[in-house]
Amino acid sequence: MHIDITFGMFVYVVVSIFFGEPFSYTWLLWTLFSSILPDGDFVPYLILRKRMRWVSHHLVHYPLFFTAITGALMLWNTYAASLFGLAILVHFIHDTYTTKRGIRWLWPFTRTGWCYYDKKWHSVTWRKRHSMYQESLNTIPREKSTIRWEIMSRVESFNTKNIILLLCAICSVVLFM
Image (cartoon, rainbow, N blue to C red; front, top):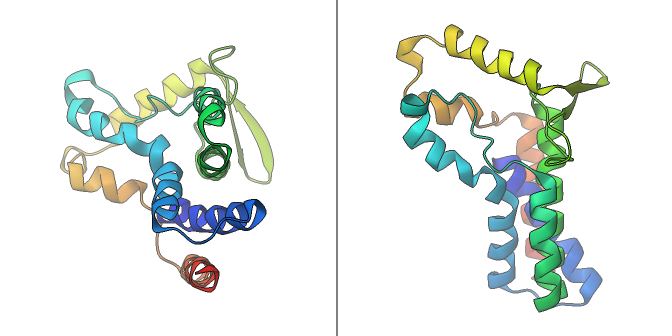
């Protein structure tokens, strides 16, 4: 999640410079919110995961869904739509490289997801994704299936590369101010 926020800061600075917009906390917060919005379905997942036997929180992890929202936002404010759309796009690109279950870039036209690992692209069919979910249901120990564990297992570690990237993003925002 902090990587998505980091990229959101970069998106805010680049788009604002492109549009010639001055610094605004409101638009910065809008972009940061947009950069983590696809993970907003994590809250209902946490609440309903045991009752519904859900394993993944990908209820709205569909890029075309957010493309439609971005298109509607274009009618209201091109700058806001650009911040929103690019922050969401960068989020999905990041997820494509960090999950083996794939991102369903063309849903609802196909249930196939795509991901990149081991230096090559993989398509993940619905059946394969479903079997991965079932396998993880059986392999997660009971004591690890707490809400705290669910959250911590999805947050990237703060390693040197991520800290440097975050500091660069913060510096870019500060310099833009």
